[in-house]
Length: 182
Image 1 (tube, rainbow, N blue to C red):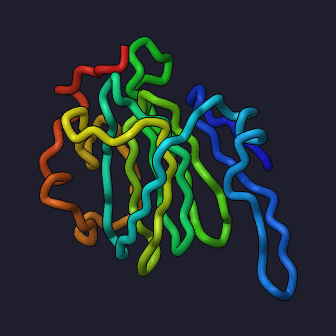
Image 2: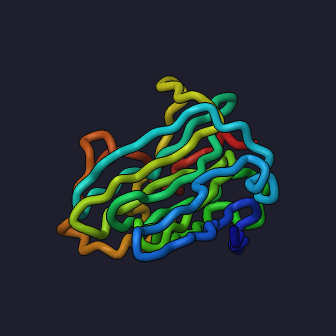
């Protein structure tokens, strides 16, 4: 696998080795031994969602002590995936990395604990999968506004075509945010 380090410490884009022929393709989507070159993480939960074009999910996180590192990928369609650094004292605090993940490019995106995460569906539909290193705890849920002007994330979607859950319409702005990630 090819590991692409981003400008934010700990956030990586992973390109697996894909073996293809006339029958289709094969690749290892996760191998603990190989993944150790990225991070030492014990994944405990896998999640999957299906969404239609224009859906933006995020920017979500789990507060300590239930913070989650994530390894994300797309098995159908295309998304723009975003990680925002929320780690206090980080030189990249408030900055983000965005990467296009698709069923065709097989890329994966790793976010360590201390990041808000979201994605936008750019294809007619998308199936999104991710591994977490901590179980979900609803009482530890946190989020930021997806369209926060301070974060200035280009979601690659026309604003009038964005589809949000009721919950995702009402998250706080970054300037009102106090990070729980010390």
